[in-house]
Amino acid sequence: MHSAQVDLRQALSGVVAIPVTPFDAEGRVDQLAYRTVVRRMLHEGVRTVTPGGNTGEFYSLDESERRLVVELAVAESVAFGPPAHVVAGVGHDVATAVRGARHARAAGAQLVMVHQPVHPYVSDDGWVEYHRSVADAVPELGVVPYVRDPLLDARLIGRLGELCPNVVGVKYAVPDAARFAAVARDAGLERFVWVAGLAELYAPAYWAMGATGFTSGLVNVAPRLSLELLTALRDGDARTAMALWERIRPFEELRAHHRSADNVTVVKEALALLGHCRRDVRPPSHPLGEVRRRQVRDAVAVLKES
Image (cartoon, rainbow, N blue to C red; front, side, top):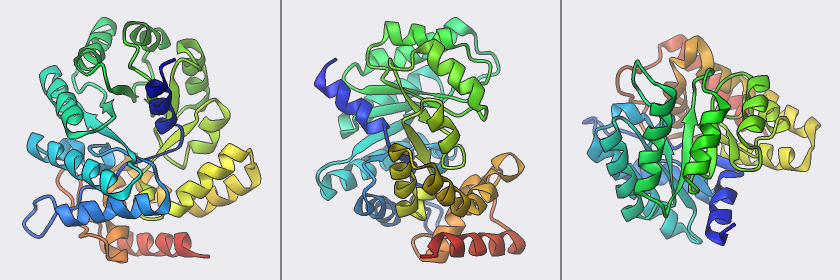
């Protein structure tokens, strides 16, 4: 395997941070706050960031804003040194996804994460061709499909890997550990880096089934805890991992409540409490009411306990 591909695989074997996209008082992307959020992660030891993930409100950003957050993440990564890996989120129609991937390459990102196709009719062959179009457009970059469909057949992921050597990992976000274990083995447990795409709440179970990385929105708020969980999982220290999981659990359950309706809002509320950015979100997300805000405050207090 080429050394560059090995390095890209290693980038996915850890905490894959999904930064929020802060907005200013006029509703524009707050560039300074964005760089501050990313810088804080890097300072704590995070080595892989994904601008344009769902926690970054990918679908509420226009194309110029999606490009901007990739450029800001790359700039902060390079400024920090040694550079961290940037996994740019791309998606929408094929042409838009390809443009996003090519822009990510030009901006200096090393990988792209392809959001699940947003279309009411997704055929098996069409799923493969959608991702192949992106992968073929940027053969120098690592490509990571984002899988949220519990019915997606493992053979399709395997076929994509055969057609596209640069598809190096899979972000698997189906809340079913047994299904994940079967899909990973049937598609190729060693062929791809398997990233638990449902963050810390599912990381221990998915780790036991073969994942070697996990995504995180919590890392915006408490990066050290996410990294401590990673260390415990790598060390096979189940007792420590589950103690950390219990500490993280109240915050993550607030994010997961009611089909994750407040997923991003909870993270931004926590960041606002900590003074890192405004709490503003864009529709279809919505600001929290007072009761939920108090719950976030209580959960953050637990995260901050020494």
